[in-house]
Length: 289
Image 1: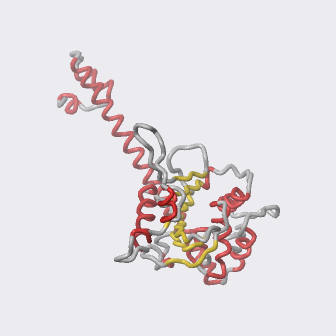
Image 2: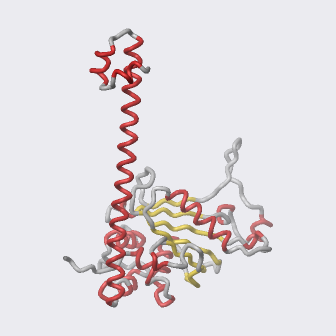
Image 3: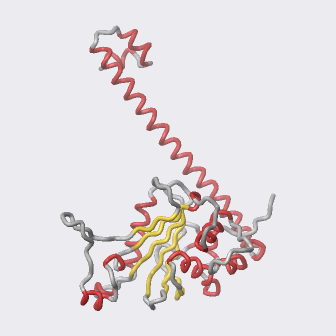
């Protein structure tokens, strides 16, 4: 069996990247994604990530500072879930409410950016990186609602969408392995667990040092191998459930079609035996129409 060169990013989020000594890895990735220098201040503990050893959730909440000295909470998550859109909505809502203390003014609501690493089919689209923001557009004039000058000053924001949560959906498996810029270099690594010598993206060379499989101690290697086996079984179960659901839906659709055909034939006075041969339905089903 080929020895792994690097550990997977989702496991690293649980065990390695929570350490302040390794903040440079995630800070580099986020800086490339957001196109500005990001400094990680701390990992925020919440109900979703207190007990990461049980591998319940691949979620990491980070308090960061951007190049304009604004404080932002970034939620990085990785999971394989067919209710993903609803889960990321719940995730950002959770982060907002957990970090607004009782009695605080609403002005203290933190900006939240949700970064989602997706390794399964989600929605339809040709791109591999999607960015979602909240904007308000006029129904009649089709204009975008803007902040007034005094609101910009009071809020410290230059546009409405910078108040509301933002979402990044990175569909790793859709990436074509052609690294055209430094962000692509990161996505190449996330997909292939390989860092090419010519890659220059922020944090990527540090990732190569921190995430090397050979750097793990024996206990960590056992934990990692068990985690990968568990993830494979879970992915297989998800695929099986999805396939079974699809087959069940198709079967129900076919049955409905046969019933409609039989009903039409019966209205035309065609004998039940002929309808049975054409549709495969039982005589009891045909007579009950």
